[in-house]
Image (cartoon, rainbow, N blue to C red; front, side, top):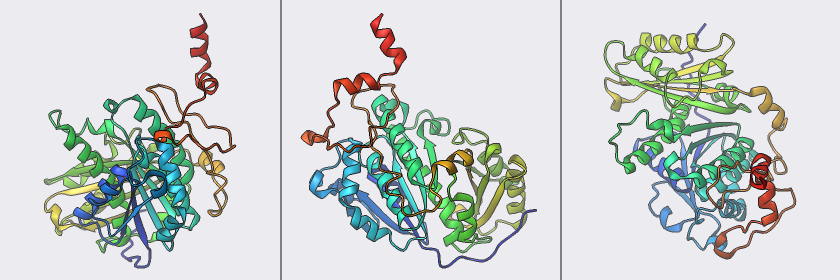
Amino acid sequence: MLEFDTNIDQYATIKVIGVGGGGNNAVNRMIEHGVEGVEFIAVNTDGQALNQSKAEVTMQIGAALTRGLGAGANPEVGRKAAEESESQLREVLKGADMVFVTAGMGGGTGTGAAPAIARIAREVGALTIGVVTRPFKFEGRKRAANADAGIEAMKKAVDTLIIIPNDRLLEIIDKKTPMLEAFMEADNVLRQGVQGISDLIAVPGLINLDFADVKTVMSHKGTALMGIGIATGEDRAAEAARKAISSPLLETSINGARGVIMNITGGANISLYEVQEAADIVASASDEEVNMIFGSVINDSLKEEILVTVIATGFNEQEELRAKPSSRPPVEKEYDHTYHYAEEPSNRRPVREPREYREPVQDNYRVQADPQEESLDTPAFLRNRRRR
């Protein structure tokens, strides 16, 4: 049976840290949309890009390594920049109950630094949620390969990782949408992923959630999916709920999810019946044993619209739990991995290097690949094909 909880958790400290260009843009979108009850932090290796940030806290990482000129689309530089500035990052994240690490995967700073920052957030004891995008297919194979490696690193560093495939946005937006607007929409979806959760805790509404409830559904839950639905009219609540659970952003059905968080947002005229109706639709589409929590937030700017956000977690819960530590800190050794990021366009998936640390060549911040290693990175069936 669904239960309503009207208590507001006033003591949860929520921090949103945007990493790299995509993460910084997402933070700006959140501030523009009036996301409340959270502290915003913008992190980048590019000092000039930080000047455009609207966050109350901005941090340039890796100043000695990059001299404020960015990571040059090299994730290794992004990772090392975060390690160089670890003490400062630890200081700004200290005291947080919940940290959202948001970034666009595929570039240099976001891909390389976000996993390192997420690791630090967990080490200081925060429930750590990653919200990242996969690049559009037209951005090329190199960015796709870098994104794959970055996402694998993020999975090991966070409690829950929400992955938004940008290509799925093409099923939502108009075909004539300009490229710039398509990227803005990707930033906007990052914003909705964070706001859909944070509003339930931090913003007074019709139904609020305790931080402990959210922690139960999102702690050590691995990969998560997000669906968004918006509707108007007489059956707006039911229609928005159905759109959310069949959203193109959901790569699979929410049936296999062990946990679901649902946010129903509407104007001042949203009724309790509409909230119950939307919640029932999502609950009936979920597994019978699902741990579902939901809340409702009032947003006057929506007027006649209702927005339903569904976060589904715990698809591979048992496997993820075996891969994670039994307690949060310390986690330094567990995430001390280096990944091969793509140097040239390739379909190869990234492969972990040996645990022995090797300093990359600093010339233009590119890691020079060993020819012998390169051959070992090539899948066996491709090596055999070349010998024929």
